Amino acid sequence: MKPIIIDVREPFEFKMGHVKNALNIPPSELMAGAKKLVGVPKDTPMILYCRTGSRSNVSIQILRSMGYTNLTNGINKQQVEARYGR
Image (cartoon, rainbow, N blue to C red; front, side, top):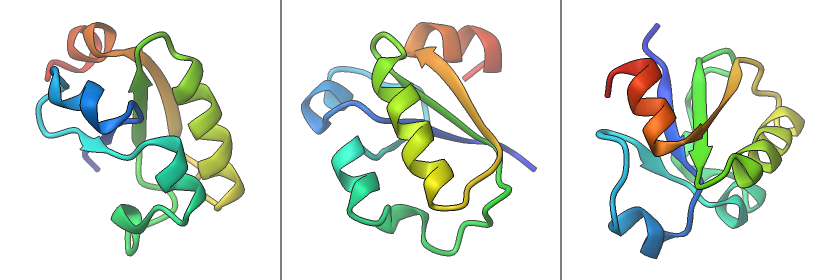
C-alpha cells in the first residue's frame, strides 16, 4: 500500500513548496475531524511532515486518537523527499 504524505503546515507555507502529491492538512483541520481522510483505512501508511518535526509529531498524536495506526514523522520536506523519493 502506497503511503499518504501529509504536510501539516499552514496553507501559506504549503504554497511556498511541498512534497509532490502531499495533502495539506494542518493540525486545526485534523482536530476538526480530518475531512480529507474520510474513507481512508485506519492502517494506511501515513508520513507526516512540517518544518521541524514538531507539528507533525503533535499531528501524529491527533491521528492516533482518531484510530490511525501506521504513522511516521517524516520531519520536514527535504527528509521526506530524500527518504521516500518524492
